[in-house]
Image (cartoon, rainbow, N blue to C red; front, side, top):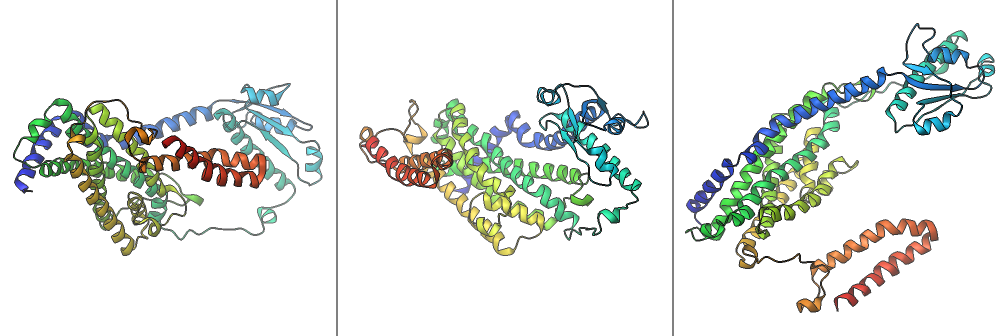
Length: 469
């Protein structure tokens, strides 16, 4: 392999890629504009909708004895203040709540006025529908009014806050503003970084492999003096370049947007938070992003090698998102530790980004993640080269869909392979997930044990053997 031929192929593919305005817009322009616009637009829409709901008058029905004082307070105490509630008569408030014609039913439990007068505790039950925005708003407003009424009753009894709460608990959070912001925004930032890196490899890989087949220029490229390995390396460097550009721009745009948004979001107890990324942390994140982008670029390029058309390439690469998403979601699972996933592809990088933002990543896990991700990327590149050197893959004849997981072994003249084994294992897991809890609920632990051990472990393999014979 000569670097001159690789450079020529790389230059040719980069020129073709840069001529595509859609690719440039998706990879360069969109990341800079997308996240600030989404965050700004979404926050404005949410605040506007919430203000509109809070500004409306919700319908409230009040039932029970001694409700005159409560009704007056819910309606604003004679116009002195306006909580935004309108007390209306309703013969069947429970049914009206279900239908949505009534937003809140305030049920004053029997004996309420007598209990208040005697210095005891009275009960007011609030009925609302948590799936309706107006009903939730009415419940919030009513709680605020009733709490104010309770404080007034306490003052009339001559009680103070110390009498009700003799032990006052004050929480002191040892985490810094940056750690609180990293805890809140680090996992989604790491998750989106992985998704955007994969998206950056998606379209360039399809275009320079499956798209070239569809345009009929693959044969012209293969007759040039460059070897197939040099062609693959040149194409791979093109995809890697576009993936890195897209990932870096997305990460920068997301980091700036989240950091700006974090300054307006209060943490628990009213504490402030901030998303702070130091130059050293940013450098390690970018260092970890390089092998991850290399892995995604190689896998996307290898899968697109199988495709005959651009559309078929999209079909082949779409399941890659399904495979990557569960690995990336470990960042939002409570209790996951980097040391347990350092050697797992994608998951290690996501957790590394999270821990780097939190400031708890040690040198050992960092090196493990970088080494393992680099090793997976190298294996993926070797696989891509192997696929590109196979004529039956590169110039595959058109045909129907090959349901290889369901084909009988006699039709191919060979025993079932790894695909059939994986399909059988997946079927067992699906059956276990959907039916084992129901069988346990109906027949008890013994029935669930028989279903797992006899049904899945014995009968399912026997049925598979009968099918593939």
